[in-house]
Length: 231
Image (cartoon, rainbow, N blue to C red; front, side):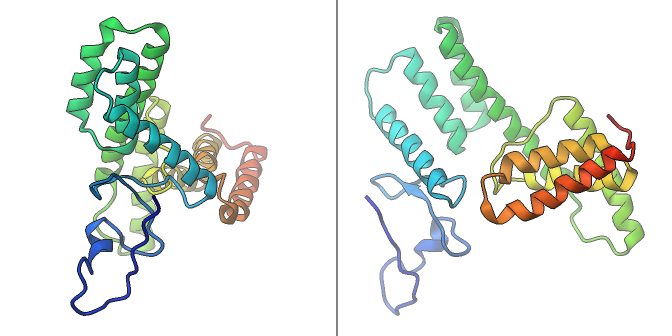
């Protein structure tokens, strides 16, 4: 059922602060809620495709959550959906995964492994946020030093196999942008290419992002053609 909350302030109206209560900071704010009005998740983007995918996932989640007798494969499906929505803690998810590991077929094991990768990505996103400076650099020299330090860390993390999620609203954008800027600043094609490809995965489906992504691709290709090292 589609629910629309009109945010015009009307004195004395019940639930006047609903947008803020449900985590909204701007317009439009799209979320999926259950029958109790609790937020389950929000679409990964504002496109029709993202909304349809989110609606399908929420439908599967509601069906499985309310099912009394779940198979092990269905328990895995439910857990991976909860991980994707961010509605289960890392400790709880790992506990439930461990309980299921010994009784799964190969397909369910692969599904669970994908869910664990998302969990690892979420853990890594906390690292990204913790590494970011708490205040703006006071000078260009300081900004350059901050970029170098972050770029070295993020590039090393990337080479070690660490990845953020592809959530457009997560810190992955910052992670990959820093790598691009670091690669350009140090004339290294490796981090610049990896950063561009990461941004392409996150924002490639957004029409408004295409001009900027195309410009970025051209800059990376020019760096590669110029013999930028760091591969």
